[in-house]
Image (cartoon, rainbow over all chains, first blue to last red; front, side, top):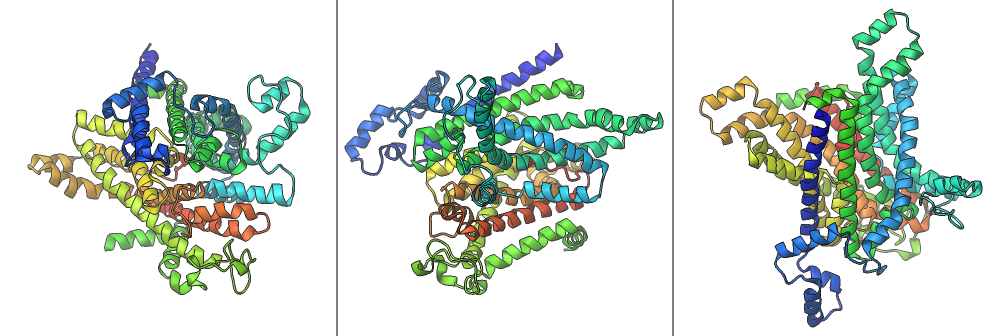
Length: 335
Length: 288
């Protein structure tokens, strides 16, 4: 019951946060530019055209009325029309979402599958050669510009060695669209050659995106395991003669992972943001590439639509993480 | 002076913090002495089409770019832009975030709640996303990049200062100073602020690295200062059409960004260990 109350409490904050986000994007789009209409109309428009457009877009009304209208439209799922594709921005974003989610989820799984075991080993063999090597990796992971890492990987694996495709999501026809995730669709329709190509296309962008997340997970798991190793219950288990692998991989890992679970949730949001730049490098047809192309074409509505969209996803992910954390760690329930 | 000396000697004993200090010192030297150190100081603006895309050699240590300009000289001048962006953006974030954090931490009530809610909204969205939106609206230029980064980074300082101020209020010396009748202004500026300087300094060092990384990403996306400014992120974007042949073109600026950000990160970690022993290295990607 307390848990339900807590979830409701978090949900209550959810609406104001989203509304605040809308205020911010509204201010960015309507108030910061000297004349947003001139921006939309372009440089060649005559003053009369600009005035006509201003009435069309409703920019001659008071700001408060405009804001209410803006929120009202967003609630109905209307983010305006892209100036370039001439399609509703919501449709564009929805069509590109599976590509982004596929990339993000794969990057996330890779960083978990590699990062957590490495973090544990790093803690167990503290100050070993592996620990020192991993420290270099974790420090680099937070300092490297992901777009540069992506380009360097392309240079080595795609251009010099020819092991992977340079960019894109697939060569040839996509698999039967069941979920929109190519890997899953190909596997479901038993189309293994397509699965292989999709995986090859995914390898470099996923590695690029996963690297900083992996560095974070190694660091976090290492610190968590080191903390737990010194606790009394571990000493007791060792005194009782429990086999070391059982102590490490079951008891220590379980209690070390509570904080890592929260971290994984937060990472998901950060990976989504990192996907913007990574997608641009690999021409990955997701919402990140869409945003970057919109920037290049000065497609102003689309950039704002993307910002609201990305912000909303991020806020939702944070909410889910908060609630999940409370489920995992009973100590959190008291607050 | 003695406090600064203490911190410096302690830092020098920690190997990674020392590496960080050396890297930052190197960056500063490159930026300040760029006209002296560069082999072709005029190449920031001059074009030599006959010499375009030459591989590294004795005449051009890091090769030349698509305009035939010397990469090494352009990198040195790029260090100036990087430092300017980092310093002003982090300085402005400090100037906005610290007072807001102090006010929100000192007073209890609706104002405090409102201020922290506003900073939560900014923290709820990835910095690069908001910065893209702002920089796109304002148009690509150096001041706009700095503005976009400052507007999106101040909440980190506000949050740190808020938490530390709240924690300090339980201290006896703060209570007794208040009991002696010190004004809120005097109490926060003369007594609270000096005691929370450590976490602010640590956050500022990490913020430099993070801000420089985000600025490079904005430059890469074409939202940075326009050419011929030798901004590192934009240089990497330019190099892409000449890969894989002109590998040096993409390699050098990326390494420069890497070493710079690494320097500030290592220094930040080292400072945290020296100034704030409660928080040992726990930094993650999330810390911005």
